[in-house]
Amino acid sequence: MSRPVASLSLDLDNAWAYLKTSGDPAWETMPSYFDTVVPRILAIKRELGLPLTVFIVGADAEIARNVPSLKDIADAGCEIGNHSFWHEPWLHLYSREEVEEEISKAENAIHAATGVRPRAFRGPGFSISDTVLETLAARGYAYDASTFPTVIGPLARLYYFMKAPLSAEERKTRKRMYGSISDGFRPLKPYRWTLPASELVEIPVTTMPLTRTPFHLSYLQYLAGFSEVLAKAYFRTALGLCKLRGIEPSFLLHPPDFLGQGEAPGLDFFPAMNRPAEKKAAFARWALSTLQKHFDVVTMQQHADLVSARELPVADADSLRQAA
Image 1 (cartoon, rainbow, N blue to C red):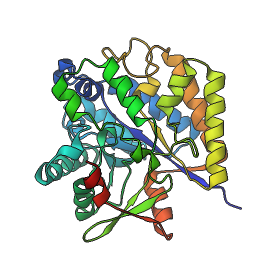
Image 2: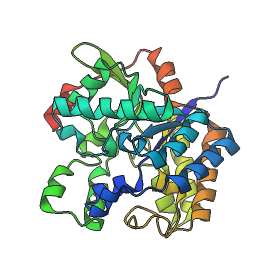
Image 3: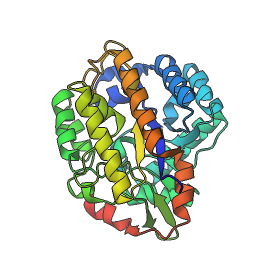
């Protein structure tokens, strides 16, 4: 009997992207930690023999000093996805013309840097709209991966607002970051968006069945800062519930999951940035090897191919417009 699958992805958000979202003007110098973090991530990928999908931000691909790191990612056999051009979590507020430019400009930059034209998308900060989905479908994307069905989205946003020195206008543009309570009840399993001229597969970032709380690596690293025993028990419970409920998890990584205290100036607000890099790397290795023990790990494109062959439930993209 074959084992269930789990897909593995990395949102390659750079230091400048987090600073920008937090309202720190230091982002304008486009600081990068790619030279430090990309080799660490690829080393663990090679050590464990893991497939990986990497969502790249277009603006990073246009900066010459970042290109060697991005080529290393492509050369390592990673699937390449589009994570927008400017990584603005208020992408859902863009006009149709702005969305088209954001996605196409990122495509072109990523293709120039890696030799791969992405056909997978994840919105920055899990930002999504009917306009984004319609644009992706029109441009021939295979799937979207922008939904994050967790009921603690508003709490995560409140935590973020408490940590980041934002103006009233900046808070307004970020008021839907991490979604609403109702977004937390979107499906955990893949489904299809119904669009005017086509359908598009959606692969959610998986959250804990029943409780709808996160278990992506950043959240686990945060819990591990209090107790690694607790974090490991929580992750095992999440994976056990996924198997029990027939959910093939989509497990998400972020670069700060592999960075330690003092290695990312200005990002102290990010969860677990007070932990040493060695401890975070060891915990990440444990989490990924645990995922590998229970599931056949695949790229997100492979996950999308598998579920596309099935009869999937559908969701109306118009519901996103009504929620905006």
